[in-house]
Image (tube, rainbow, N blue to C red):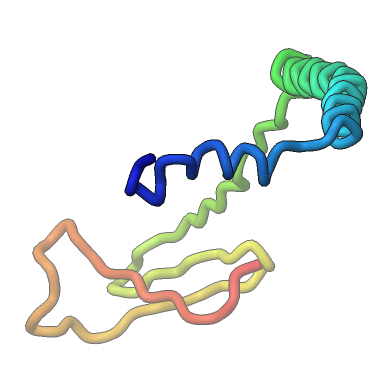
Length: 121
């Protein structure tokens, strides 16, 4: 005899947890049933992947209408400088007259500053 209390522990655990014949048949049946269910899911996943590839390809390679290029409307004002007064004809038909005495801090000859107030349409 052996004094070790764990000598037969392995055999006792196997005997305690050994499944019966019904449990083994039930587990085998469930395992085989899972295989039957996963096959359609594989095809479903493959079909979803193929549909995604087709949609992405159509979006990337499908010829689209070109985006129209809109040229910005340019506004051109013309005026004349007479006797220190700047006279500008505005698009709405009115005339803007700007002028005044020369300031001491004015820009050099050939340069100027134009201030326009109001709304141009």
